Image 1: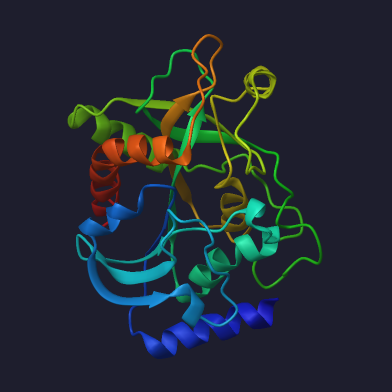
Image 2: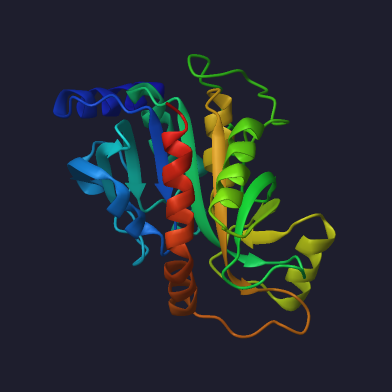
Length: 270
């Protein structure tokens, strides 16, 4: 696996001259955040050696190189999911490649279902912890060149980045929540009892991504910042049938606030 990671990173280094400082993963309905990127190079996943290919319609499947506020970034416009049939190692392969490209921070976004009764549709939630119910991407032989066999996860979401984001949100009148993200395999949306269970075990929101990427990033000692957009509610009395179109619509409406927060947070890395 490490040989494939190095070969893919070398392919991209030979093709593009940029050395990104920040990696960004854009989730369901959030691909328009690329509008804040000064795009210099774009390559489709299908043209990158050993890269998986997005099979979800709302994930564009492009790797974008450019700058945000003069800081070099690499952004995934679309991610991979366990429910697509990929292994956890395939899902997180791009994060491994980003590390070898030189990223020092990883920013992630997703759409999710709200479990906390205090949350509303359209809320932004900064993730400060997670419960991973997707098979762990570190199962199998450890890649010693990238990280330890038993990485600590007590600081999965960087507290310094969270505090900066909260300050930015306050200064720009952006309502944000903080909470725990529960990741599940999907692709089915949750039953009422599943929503209840995820809330009982400590979840504030539930989704189908993000935690495998964070686990791998922390294995490689990359600080992470992640934010969710609450697109539907799994709260008793507020549960209704939801389609992917509903999710994308809410995500698109809330995206400008998330984009502003991300942009200012990246600027603060200078």
